[in-house]
Amino acid sequence: EDQVTQSPEALRLQEGESSSLNCSYTVSGLRGLFWYRQDPGKGPEFLFTLYSAGEEKEKERLKATLTKKESFLHITAPKPEDSATYLCAVLMGTSYGKLTFGQGTILTVHP
Amino acid sequence: EPEVTQTPSHQVTQMGQEVILRCVPISNHLYFYWYRQILGQKVEFLVSFYNNEISEKSEIFDDQFSVERPDGSNFTLKIRSTKLEDSAMYFCASGGTSAYNEQFFGPGTRLTVL
Image (cartoon, rainbow over all chains, first blue to last red; front, side):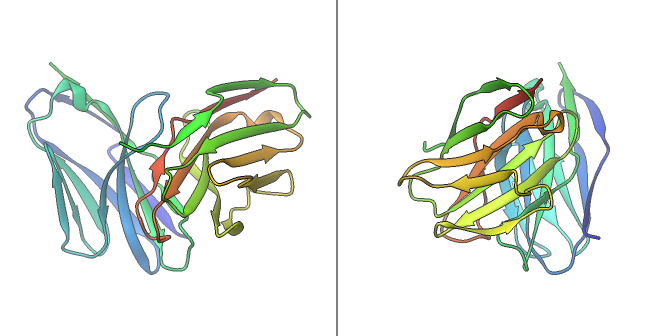
């Protein structure tokens, strides 16, 4: 069965304390891996798409990387406004746009 | 910046009633989706829609569910006879010109079935 697992479930950081979130997947024929940010009561907000192993994308304090088995979302010098749930989702080549989501990592950044 | 919009933001209904959730996708997108998220759980895929027909649907999307694009701008999800377990946040999403493009999500409709 295709699975997407994110770790840790929750992460508490001090402002400026860099860290990484992990998304591991066991799917056949990965077509793309997507990172989203979700604030409470809101819809997922698109961050990055990664299509092949070795690919990296950056946006402000966030950097996403992809290997054949997992993806990392690196957060450099986080600020309190980076507090949110970060979701990873995978797309298989056999699907018509069906994203399979992980359960998310709840990030809290304290000032 | 273009965005996906959804109405209503919150819908309360009695068990057994029909509800229609509405979405306006980003205007030049061709692929449309519905997902749901039960409180505290993962976001789950319901259905994908392209060229006026369903491309893929999940096991959740049974005969009680239907989707429609009644005109050039709206995309709707109908639940014919709601159950308590249908209570969830429902998200509409749209993608560009390929099923492999990133998907942009709306703010969601919170459906509460009493």
